[in-house]
Image (cartoon, rainbow, N blue to C red):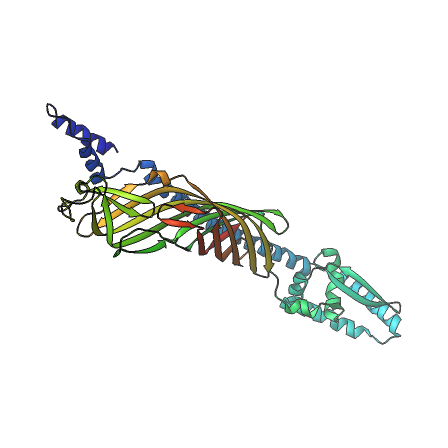
Length: 436
């Protein structure tokens, strides 16, 4: 913008003493140079991508740090447990062996002798060396112990990891009196629950939207073809658990839509009986004069000398409509976890705002002319939104997901050259989520 102002000042200095230039000259100058974009608008996207990159780097760094911290804590705990298991004195082991052998001999009338008790103690000592007993005790800290005492079966729950129960648990485990469920041993441990009530997600994906039914008066030979495409749109969302499996989600999404229209043998009318014509497109008419086209003379020749008040010519041209939108979703979701997998069903609203809209007119053999449609910016569209997120939890915090999404506008869209319609879109996103 500053460069445009300096250039205009320079031209005014050069034209001192001459007639004031026509306003059309300044319009042509603005079309040739283009509307300058403020510096903060150009940098906003850089700031956004820098913040997203910093967030991803921080999430990965936190994950690596927590993994190392948990590994160190597990190693220290394992060392302490091994010291507690190997520390019992021989006197405590002998007393436990004597008591167990006395009670067993009293109940079974001498069926068990002292030599089996000694073999049990030896096998217990050998299993301690191999580490098998310790591993089983660490995996199942609370176990059921059943023993024969005074001709009756006595069942009690003990914790073999604690030092006061270690002397009792080791001989019983070696003798086979500690019963560990076979199903519990064979099944893999379930994935840990969520680490916190908040979840931050970043994703990108493609969107496909429907086109309206166009209503153009193109003449008997006129034709029109339209195609719409959308670029990959980044999406940043934040979820918060409100009650059990129910969550609220909000976020921000940037989308860019391009609508290309190609016209062939179209009747283009002059609005002042001169070489100033109205080119129809989706949002209305583009007013273009011969002065606004470059690299050659007016392609359609002079108007017919004798004819109606409003003359017309047949033209071949293209119209490209670019629109940048900011989407703010707000949904309620229900989460259900199946082992390491999780399904999330979302339903709610999405609010769309147009931030920048431009239309480019291109005539074959001439430079295109672009204008900005400020009347379209800031318009609010409300959509009903639903999506299904399927995620796989790599660990307690990090997970990857895919998310099909459907949106349908609540209000009907009314355009100049199209019948009223509801905008519907389908999208597929994929990304990462971090729970904290």
